[in-house]
Image (cartoon, rainbow, N blue to C red; front, side):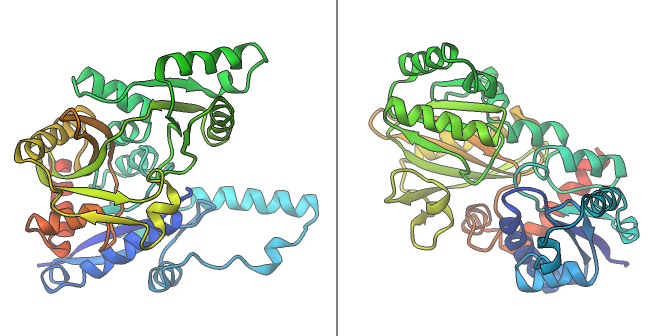
Length: 368
């Protein structure tokens, strides 16, 4: 039986480029497991930060080192305007000239995090190729990326969540009358503390917890520099718990895990600095709360039309017994120490089996 050629697509044009490389490295290793090695052949396909696709030696080298290639020293020096234009035009052409080897891919495993990777853009390209791919399609990916659209979808599905207000950049970068009026409204509807977030970024980039008017103004200005759409959420004193989902039309929910940390909130530094956050798997929760979280995770997965893979994050307000949905991540981190594969390992599915199941779910979805 011939092996399926899996295009492992990683890197990408987002601030989570390095996280994607780490995930891809772990997944590539999982495909070397005996059961997988007999079924699959991996083709690493690396998307540079400038959007150019690389296969062969360049992609293999990035996987081996876990680091993006070094920028050549001469590219950092000043160049004449004409040469700069020619270089820019050449780069644009390269973005549209995919390596001919990608035509050999039987199924794609895109492990791209953040904008231009898990927001439906790459998924649309892969769909046009008419090749199966792991994960959600255009709609599920787009809804899972944009926090405002996501929350509107959750509300329609009857999933409880924290109070929030959607804001546009134009409201923040406006005149001296409109911006204070916006801040007045946020204070009246949400109070302090509250959280200001760019709507379309991951890994806690651009998120700020604010306690005062001056902090709110600064956080809105900062978030607007990242995204045209901004979400402001009411603060809630709660435990942060997560559930993994696997499957298509009949998805499975994993056991529930909890994130613990000593910092003020789960920001970028806490998330990616070793020792600053801990995982408790399974989360020490009452059985009925665990069951409720799992049921809500499946409802969220179906609400956004997700497929294959997702991690759903919740707030558990212990004082009242409330469970509030926070967000769904349709392409979560996938290293050996990431929450998604760890939740499935604790649920009885090892890392190598997990990647196999995801490929099989991609093939199933394509046929259906």
